Length: 177
Image (cartoon, rainbow, N blue to C red; front, side, top):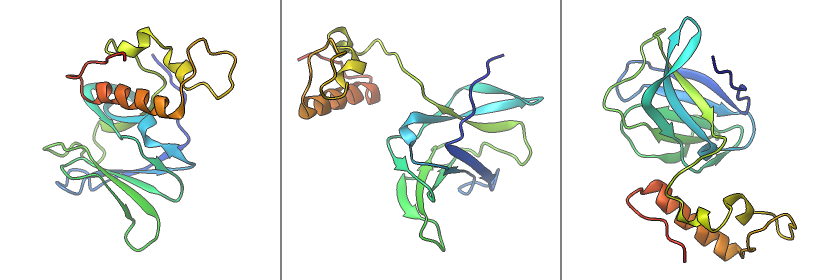
């Protein structure tokens, strides 16, 4: 059995309107400032208190920083990502859509949402990784531990743009220039 540390920087509030098309949603609330891009949501089957992730059921939130008193609403149905406020308050709300064609949850059912914090990644598509250690590209200015050439902020932004382009569109090739 795999045990991961609990996430305390985001709280599950509820799965609201389970089984109701166009209303079913997972409600999260950050307890401190977080970048949602560091998290993924997946579905799992609750087997006597043990959660078993279901293959091919993953939603990455994308790059968005939120902080209390913000809310995060993940609708399971189709829609468009937007930033808004919670009705009747001034609390910020990030509204995401999983774009599924059917509802996922039933009240007290065995399917549960599970949030994971990302801790690293590996991809064979990083052509730049052969030339530069990615962790060293972003070493603090003046760092003496880095073996890679220091990049200007403009160069760092270009490397980041090119890496994200490859990550988000696997049909593109990473090229070293």
